[in-house]
Each structure stands twice: as structure tokens, then as C-alpha cells.
Image (tube, rainbow, N blue to C red; front, top):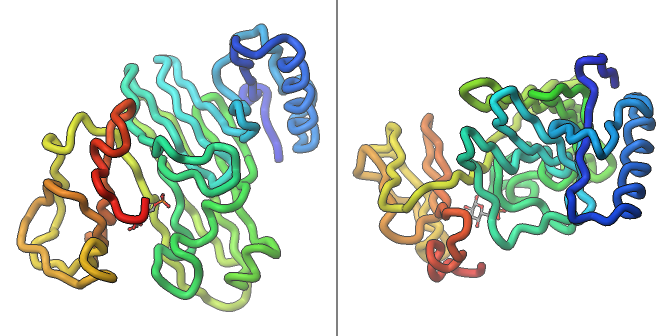
Length: 275
Ligand SMILES: O=P(O)(O)OC[C@H]1O[C@@H](O)[C@H](O)[C@@H](O)[C@@H]1O
């Protein structure tokens, strides 16, 4: 790991924390930074008010907050390597389910979470394992972070391949860019699927339509029985009832019900089965 002076990570302790908790957190952050070669000075004093850098949520999970000169921000959790927030001009674009566990006890449900090395259903668990493990920070600045995930005993038990995944998130002036690089570090070729299971905020379902080459495409409708293959007749998808579908073909889209922050779960998800 390396970090240049201009890439110095900072952190901010929330004002609700009392002084002793703040001291404990700073000590733990220093240990984390030093163990990764950032050096003790990499951890900004809590008083500095620095917004970007490595932070810890109230439940102990680490995340990197990016911030640009306009004040736009994005949060990227190391657990699962998941982007949980992108705020531009004060507007949040990414949603996290209200019932998501943010303490590492289960994968974060929401954000731009990884489905890797498979979407599923398939040979290994649904959505793969990338969202179940801690990614490592390989480099970071105020506006970008690069995370890596390498095989472990846990991943090898499910999928015994030599790989290195690099996920980069970059907060630009007008957009947030993510890139996933998968390297084969072994001798044998392997197949994989990669997707970001993306949850976006919307103003209302009535305002939403999903454009793409959907007409005549086959899709798995998970709301019918155990799942039924059907054919789409529309050019554009609108959602007037609960949807849980996987479209096949070039324009593969997994349509999840979406909700607004602050609206109750049941308002939008209705009678979502099993949830
Ligand atoms: O694991 P998460 O983020 O809660 O997502 C679960 C959803 O993932 C989708 O891919 C499935 O089609 C849904 O059936 C399922 O509910």
C-alpha cells in the first residue's frame, strides 16, 4: 500500500460521540492506518473537520468517504466493497434498504453491491461472495478510492480460482464512475459474471421507466410460482406492481422495486413475499 502526501486520508468523528469514544476511535484508526503503511500522520485530528478519508460508522464498519471541491460526496464500504451513497448538489442518488444491516452481520443490502463471480442462481451462492468479504484499500485520495479483493480460504472453498478484483470509485465533477477489473492470476481460464446490484433513489415509481432493448426479450419473472420464463412485449419498462425480474440477453437488467429514502418500506414494496 502506498499513499502520497496529497492522498492523505482524514477522518471525522461525529459530534455526538463523547470525547473518550472519539479518542478510542482515533487510536483504532491510527492502528489501522499504520498497519497498512499510511503512517500515524495519515490520520487527521478529529478537530480538523476534514470530510474525506477513512471513517467508521456507529456500528464499527469502515468506509471511505470521497468529497470533491463542490461538496459532493460518496461513501464506499470496505465490507462488500459497496458504494452506499452518492450525493450531488445535495441530492442522494443511491438507496440502501431501510432494514439493511450496517454492522457486518450480513451483506449490505442496497447501494451498488457486487454480484461476483456470479449473479445466480448458479453453482455457488446467489450473488456470489464479493459482497460478503472485506475488501482492502490499495490507494485513495479525497476523490477516489481503489479497493482490492483476493482469494481467501473462504472464497476458495466456494470457488477455487486465482483472481484479483480491483474496484475503483471516482467522484468526478459531474458524475460518479465505478470500474471493476478482474485479473486471472492462475494458469487456467475461468468464467465469471459481474454485476452491480444497484439501488437508486427515485421520486416515485410513477416517474420511473427503464429504457433499453427489452422488446421480445425473455425474462425470468420471479413473482410467478417458483419463477417463470416470459417474453417482454414493451420497449420500455414501467413498474405498476411489485417486480422481481431478470432479463436475458445483451441488455440484461435485474429490475428491483425501488423506494425513496424516508418512505416506509411497505409503501413501495407492498406485499413483497418473504421479506
Ligand atoms: O440481497 P439483496 O440486496 O437484499 O437483494 C435481494 C434481491 O436480489 C435480486 O437479485 C433478486 O432477484 C431478488 O429476488 C432478491 O430479493
